[in-house]
Image 1 (cartoon, rainbow, N blue to C red):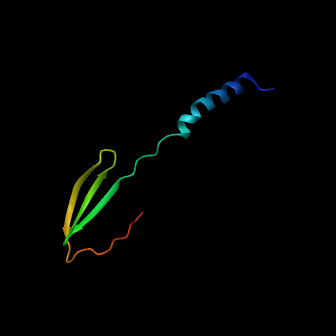
Image 2: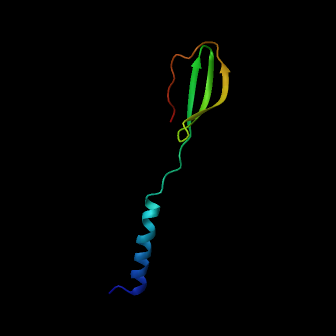
Image 3: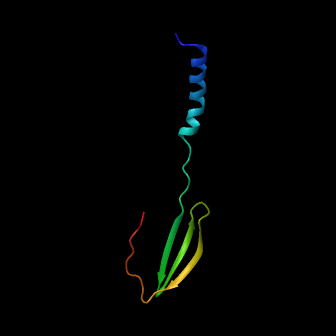
Length: 71
Protein backbone atom coordinates (compact mmCIF):
# COMPACT_ATOMS: atom_id res chain seq x y z
CA UNK A 1 0.00 0.00 0.00
CA UNK A 2 1.21 3.50 -0.80
CA UNK A 3 1.69 5.79 2.18
CA UNK A 4 0.38 9.33 2.27
CA UNK A 5 3.95 10.70 2.22
CA UNK A 6 4.84 8.72 -0.93
CA UNK A 7 1.63 9.75 -2.67
CA UNK A 8 2.08 13.45 -1.87
CA UNK A 9 5.73 13.30 -2.99
CA UNK A 10 4.66 11.84 -6.33
CA UNK A 11 1.96 14.49 -6.77
CA UNK A 12 4.36 17.34 -5.94
CA UNK A 13 6.97 15.93 -8.32
CA UNK A 14 4.50 15.55 -11.17
CA UNK A 15 3.30 19.14 -10.74
CA UNK A 16 6.80 20.66 -10.74
CA UNK A 17 8.43 18.38 -13.36
CA UNK A 18 6.70 19.76 -16.51
CA UNK A 19 8.10 23.23 -15.82
CA UNK A 20 11.60 21.78 -15.70
CA UNK A 21 11.12 19.55 -18.73
CA UNK A 22 9.91 22.33 -21.03
CA UNK A 23 12.48 24.96 -20.04
CA UNK A 24 13.85 26.95 -22.97
CA UNK A 25 17.59 26.59 -23.59
CA UNK A 26 19.90 29.57 -23.33
CA UNK A 27 19.95 31.35 -26.71
CA UNK A 28 23.28 31.06 -28.51
CA UNK A 29 25.10 34.05 -29.92
CA UNK A 30 25.19 34.34 -33.70
CA UNK A 31 28.06 35.99 -35.56
CA UNK A 32 28.13 37.23 -39.13
CA UNK A 33 31.23 38.01 -41.17
CA UNK A 34 30.92 40.13 -44.32
CA UNK A 35 33.69 40.74 -46.84
CA UNK A 36 33.68 43.74 -49.17
CA UNK A 37 36.89 44.10 -51.15
CA UNK A 38 39.78 43.63 -48.74
CA UNK A 39 37.76 44.53 -45.61
CA UNK A 40 36.38 41.71 -43.44
CA UNK A 41 33.78 42.93 -40.93
CA UNK A 42 32.43 41.07 -37.87
CA UNK A 43 28.81 41.65 -36.82
CA UNK A 44 26.80 40.35 -33.85
CA UNK A 45 23.30 39.23 -34.85
CA UNK A 46 20.31 39.96 -32.59
CA UNK A 47 17.72 37.52 -33.93
CA UNK A 48 14.92 38.64 -31.60
CA UNK A 49 15.45 42.33 -32.37
CA UNK A 50 16.34 41.76 -36.05
CA UNK A 51 19.48 43.89 -35.75
CA UNK A 52 23.16 43.74 -36.67
CA UNK A 53 25.80 45.31 -34.43
CA UNK A 54 29.14 46.07 -36.07
CA UNK A 55 32.04 44.84 -33.91
CA UNK A 56 35.34 45.03 -35.80
CA UNK A 57 36.84 45.35 -39.26
CA UNK A 58 40.19 44.02 -40.44
CA UNK A 59 41.87 44.72 -43.76
CA UNK A 60 43.17 41.63 -45.55
CA UNK A 61 45.70 41.41 -48.38
CA UNK A 62 42.90 40.23 -50.70
CA UNK A 63 39.19 39.44 -50.63
CA UNK A 64 37.91 36.24 -48.99
CA UNK A 65 36.71 33.72 -51.55
CA UNK A 66 35.49 30.95 -49.26
CA UNK A 67 34.60 30.52 -45.59
CA UNK A 68 33.96 27.38 -43.54
CA UNK A 69 31.44 27.32 -40.64
CA UNK A 70 32.92 26.39 -37.25
CA UNK A 71 30.46 24.90 -34.80
